[in-house]
Length: 73
Image (tube, rainbow, N blue to C red; front, top):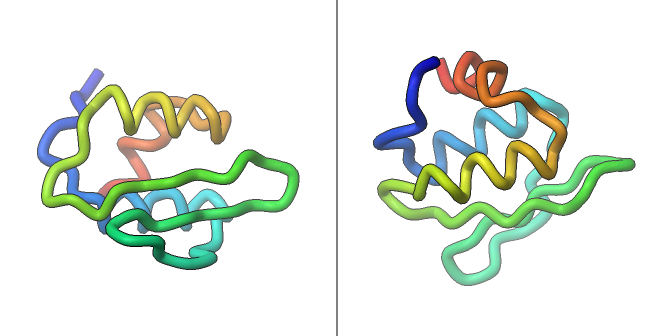
């Protein structure tokens, strides 16, 4: 399984948008994403987002890590 390394916040947001999430607003350096019937996600807009954070947000969104990695490409 590929690893979630060197992924920027902007790239992560684009991947979540592919799964139907909508950018609601930006609060400080975090983007808030929402999808009807799913939990709200907060993604930091850093150069590099920690692996554990991406995994936990994907899990909250009910997205498998493999599908999330595919959406990054």
